[in-house]
Image 1 (cartoon, helix red, strand yellow):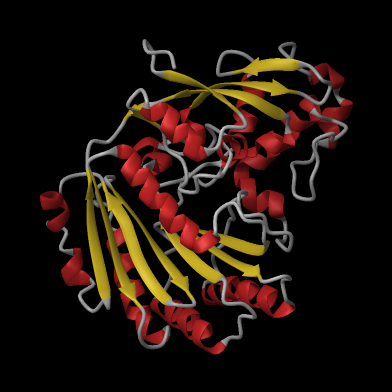
Image 2: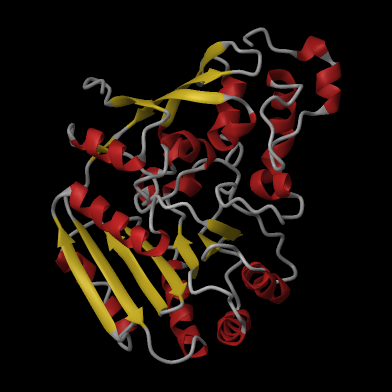
Length: 380
């Protein structure tokens, strides 16, 4: 930690739980997700969204410089002032361009107070919970909603939980009257934290209940991106919750999560980094894990969650989040990187024309750029 600039130098193998502890020793923090066993190396080169992102941006928005091993085996530094095209690309599509071995990231003072809240709906059909989800969507879609709020809806075999974090005092939290809005919850909890690691630890505990963090499992996942102009219509919400009632899952280990984003993530221009979904208000993530193996029933169930929404919103061209790997996705590069894809393909042609860094959904080099060798920037 540079205690003059409060920029942290972070090894790419660092896990998020370790990162929190090391930053906490300086009373500093940065935005990232809630699972403590996720590594920063992939997280901060895809996006890295979490409860503080509405205030501070995505994890990759903290990154100010990287060290990268390129396909030709050279080791380079990349930042806004050196190898700037490469730096732009790794902030959203890093795995297609090289191995990032080190990050230099800005940090923020730790929040002093936080309120954790949850409302649990465990009785009745999913269809009976649809009206509550509509209330949540209305609440988080308010353009005046403070950035001090983070929230999510989690649907599982056990029902629905609306939870989140408010970074402020208990008195200020109560002014939002969420207990009145979600008064029909079967149970509710409010926890007050005045120590940052306690907040992060509570997020990790909740994540472990969903994912059994760190255990290898057979997993299928999908995602959709929603913005303020593509809120889910009431009828489509009804159809989705009825689908959850009527459809065989093939496993008890499934969940559908709606995560509030927006705020500072939206402040960054669409073309400022490779990360494409700067207009996202919330994401839907659907997951299912197999016990021993992953059945076709389970795969079809998860695919159907997306299908119900896409059928109900045929006019929307949905994007997807590259961190939720979806091998069945049509046109994955376009859905992951949108309007930034063309520039990514040109940079790929310069940095890795032979595709040493390849996976089925990675950025492909632009063929014309590969031929036009005179376009290779001198800095690379």
